[in-house]
Length: 360
Image (cartoon, rainbow, N blue to C red; front, side, top):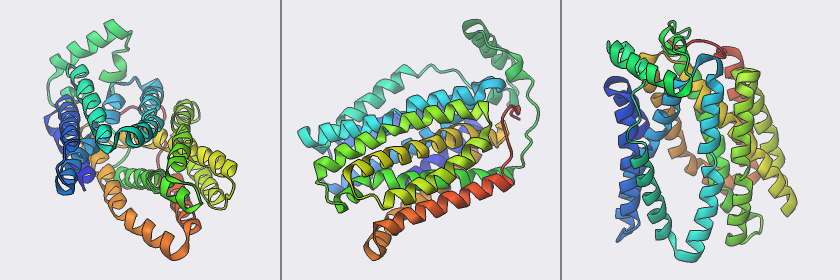
């Protein structure tokens, strides 16, 4: 629920009060609440701090990729956003590794302490990030926008025309929102239902908790690799030609994983499945979804889509528990496959191709 509130709140604040301001508060909220969680005297305080931290984290997913999307030149916008996604998704294996080392050697409080401190350091480092020139322009602040654009051009050999001559959006809000909700929801549901539950699922396959956490860490090494593949493909072959096949392959790899019984098969197939999921994450969440909306609605559009996906994730633990306990682990991966195939069909039929299209 915190992720949902953060996503929607960031959308409104980002569109009406500025990208940069929103980008600053969300990480500060996450960092402070995570630090306080390390000193929780009871489970209720811990849950409260986790809720507040999730508000900041939900906002981060909306603001981060949407801002990069608005600063990027049109001809290689996918490369810009995809590159950020590669580095962002290094956090997946790093997070599993850090959790494994900290929790097994220093207890769970150490994990919150380290991550809270890292968040505060990052907030301090990025506190002077400039405002989005696109946002400034649509709010009548052309002089301020031009100053930022000229500085970008001077410091980074930036092409001013790529920002200042954008045309209007080619996708209606309603259609864009439908596609974004479908793409983000399917991506996050498939990813969450697998990666967040994989230690538990591995226990069900006979591995002990330490081995299952190390297996999870190795599988999650596929995350940055998948994000890298997604980054390379979105500008080269197009958004839809990357996203649709990735969903189809996720369905195939997910069902294949369900019937793996050997340690090698579990590890290799899990690595491949993780990589494919992060191809989808890099191409869908970081690149495609923000491109579906014009500047005046971009943060709200991505915020609503991310928020809806977070609501589904809130319900998914109950779905996972019921499915695994009633029908076995294999059925869970069939569900993942069905979700992926349905998303592929919706995007293939209704989704616009945004490669090379100027943002409104």
